[in-house]
Image 1 (tube, rainbow, N blue to C red):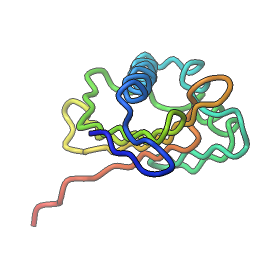
Image 2: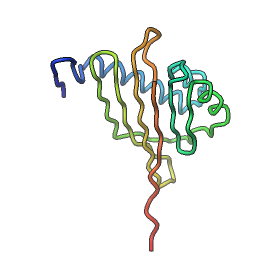
Image 3: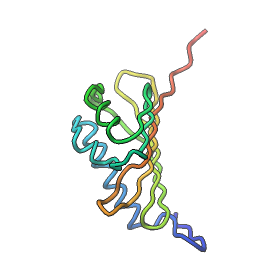
Length: 136
């Protein structure tokens, strides 16, 4: 759905397609445990933030340091539903759920992307999990 406001256009199809491709490349790097590609997807700034399941990372240096010891994603990870919302040509929010084989845990991932001179970069990310209810 495309909506227009006085100051911006929301979900322009060409921008949604562009950021969807960037997000797909990020997901492929995540599955491949390609740390260089994953790190390069983040804004090279002390202002970038990544809140993980068990960590709060401030600045690209902390994200890179954490990635060196991060557990690789298990094979067979499935994502979706995924919601992409773009605002104008240079700002996008992506929210998705993920599931790993053999687990009832549902993960949630939110990324805020901004088009900078070097291309699309994540400026804020958040990962959390929903554990299934305990019976009894």
